Length: 283
Ligand code: HBI
Ligand code: FE
Image (cartoon, rainbow, N blue to C red; front, side, top):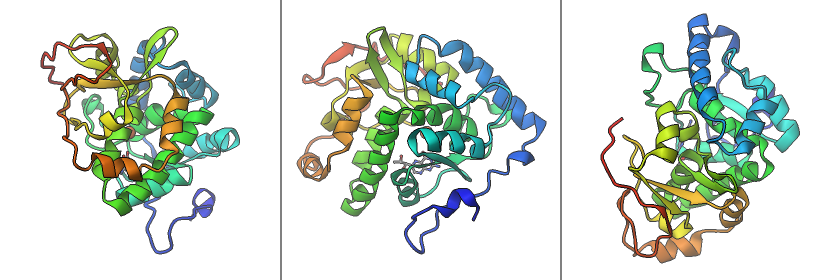
């Protein structure tokens, strides 16, 4: 246990999967992979990403020089929004993941993808987690949303409705779009950290873009092996936080018997922002 993990309030006896980031152990080649990925996204994101994301990136001094030290990020985050970044070896069990979020700790993979796999990712690595997720934790409203999601996750485990709740994370935190006065912008980490999906999500005529509706999202399957066929568009981060601050128990009871929707399907009740051609786009 180091200073970062000391403040944990993890359930007694439950492992938290936290490891040492071992920042000084990264090789030059590993830092070089970060530099390559960073340089690609740095060019693409202005004008496409929610401005609060770029503000966070800058305030955290997440830059193109190499893999950031989580201790430095946590110092800045803690002062701004009370969050920390802790290192984990990759995907961790859901209960441990939610427990971290509920306590304002973001678990980030400490490894980085190989140089010959820049667009290929089996588990979240340090680029996806730190470049994709961490900047928005500097935004007070988004920071609260992530915590509310973690709390909701712990409740969802007990109700055995995680399949439903996981879709909310997928269609917001990972692949969310937001409507701004300047136009549609990306904010989901899965898009922000992906060169190909950054342009695809906003500019391709293949996927549909539909106004976010909580019940609709909780009932919609997602695909993990290709670009999304549907992106859900929120009005504001505040509206998301307002929704997620409620207990979803009544909603889960209501949707239990409702039909589940395929990823690319458009429903008559949908508020369609742009309807996709559905043309197949394998990665
Ligand atoms: N573990 N490290 C890590 N990162 C995740 O994004 C993650 C996880 N475990 C579970 C999980 N996500 C999902 O099941 C939830 O988002 C629903
Ligand atoms: Fe992620």
